[in-house]
Every structure is written in structure tokens, then in C-alpha cells.
Image (tube, rainbow, N blue to C red; front, side, top):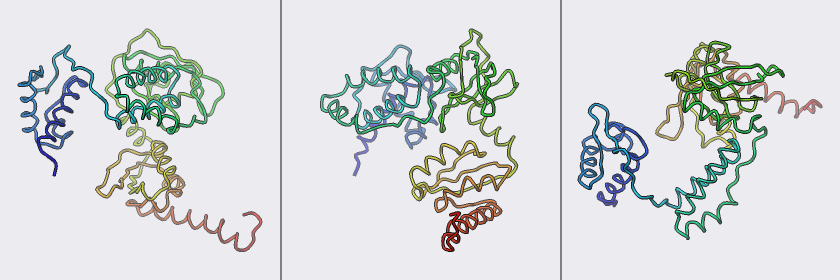
Amino acid sequence: MIDPEVTRLSRLVALLTLLQTKRVLTARELSFRFSVSTRTIYRDIRTLESAGIPVVTLEGKGFAMLDGYRLPPVMFTREEAIALLTAEKLAAQRTDATTAERTAAAMDKLRAALRRSDRDHLETLTPHIQVLEPASQPGYSNAYQQLVAAVTVHRVVHLSYCAADSDLPIDREIEPIGLYLSQHWHVVGYCRLRQAFRDFRLDRIRHLLLCEEIFTARPETLQQYWADEAKRRSKEKVVICFQASAALPALAQHLQDTKHHYGWTHDEPQTDGSVNMTFLIGSLAYLATWLLPFAGAVTILEPPALREHMRELAQRAYAFFVVRSETGDART
């Protein structure tokens, strides 16, 4: 049986850490985070205050830590250190050189804070975690780091960019709102040339320059951009149930990496571990060709017409690869 006092102590420590990492936290989001009532959160805040922690209550907003207050460095657990080691490996291969160097420097500071036994364990584990180099590297070595800076301080970015259907770069000025990693890194921003939001792959950027101009912060988010794109391109709602445990790991990852290109709008995790995924798509046949490799891990919840498209594709594949091989057709 778990001691409730130990549970509360762990929650207080986690609460204190959160107060140091975020500007303002509401009782509602904290109660959701720790799966307790808001009344319990208020009681925890009073406990921290009575212990001398300078928590400030902002009327109508939430709780914040007094500016300038910091606890001494906390010790990382071995599991947390391993998670950060994984992040270092990912940064080395899936971001630019500058970000990789800064991540490595941060990890050096982490290693210095570890107990000797944990430091030795991390050193032993390091060669056993690898992230393979992607097929193509971003065309501009520090594009990721520069774009993160541009998103943070709202600076206009000048791009020399090659679209997928052209070998000639076109100059663009964009107001970036965010970056995401699918099969490649992308930046989404308002394109002043097209007068609309556009999605740019970093490996197609031939040259990048941060302009001095500061643009007014935009309310749009990446999630809103994807939803708007789905509405613009799509007509019909599709809901599938995906059971990741029933798919090969590579296929499950491929689905997550490519779903944004097929009108995906949102996921709804289910209690059995599956995920209901909603799409808005203009062509059911087009979506069916993407879903077919996930057979056995995907259930079509709606519309029924998509099941027919899937069945037709499966029958054609069966006829080509199985029936013809049985009859000795040389084309197989």
C-alpha cells in the first residue's frame, strides 16, 4: 500500500518544480496534472507558503513563484538522465549543428550533477542508444536554430526556397509560427508572397536570413493550421481506430509521421490503448491507399464507403500477388 504522505510529498516536490518552470499556473490545470481536487491544490500551496516558499497568488490568474527565487539544483534520477541522453542523441541527428552542440553542452552539465554510479551507468549505456542519420540533411546547417529564434522573438525570415515541383529557388518572406518534425523538419509561417500560411521543409531551404523586422505576434498555432488545411482540402469526415500494438513498430511510426498529409485533425486515446483518429479528406480512395499497409491494426469506424475502398484494394493486391503466383504468371 502506498503511503499517502509519501504521495503528497512527491506531489509537493513536483509542484515546486513546476512553479519554477512556468510563469503562471492555475489551480485547475494543476488539479488535472496531479489528478487531485482543486481544494487539495490550494492546501498544497498553503503548505509551500508555510515552509517559506514565496508563492504569489495572482487574483483571477493563478499561482506564480516570486521573481528571482530558485532552489538549489535538484538531483536527477537515473531514468530522467537516460531520457535526456535519448534527447541528446535525437538532437545530434535530427536538428542542426548548433542545436546539437548546445544539447551536448547541457548534457555535460547534467553528467556533472549526477552521482558517480549514475554517471558511470550513463557512460556504459551511451553506445547502446543510437539514432540513425536521416536520408537527407537540411540544406542550411543552422536553419533549425535560427527558426526557433525567429519564432521566439517574432522576427521576419527571408528564405530562398525550392518547392517540390521546381529546381529553381524562390525568395520568400515569412512570419514563422512553429516548427514540427514529421519525416523531415518543417516550419509553418505566414508567407507574404502568397498572402497565406504555408508549410516549408527545412531541407529545401537554400538560404535563410533573419531580418531585423519584428512582426506582430500571431494567435495562430500549428494545430489550428493543420485543422484549417484539412478543412480547405477536405470534404468528408473519416474516423479510424488504430491499435499500435497490432502493427509493426516501423508502421506505427510511419502512421504518426505521415498523418498530417492526409487531413488528420485530432486523436482521441481510448481506455484499451487504441486511438480514434479523425480525418477530413476529399478522396476516400486516396486515403485508402495510405491505410492499406496498416491492415490488422486499423478499424474503419466511419464512413462505410471507406471500407469498400479498402476491400477493393485488398482484393486487387491479393489477385496480383497471390493468384498470379499460383498460376505461374511471369509478371509476379
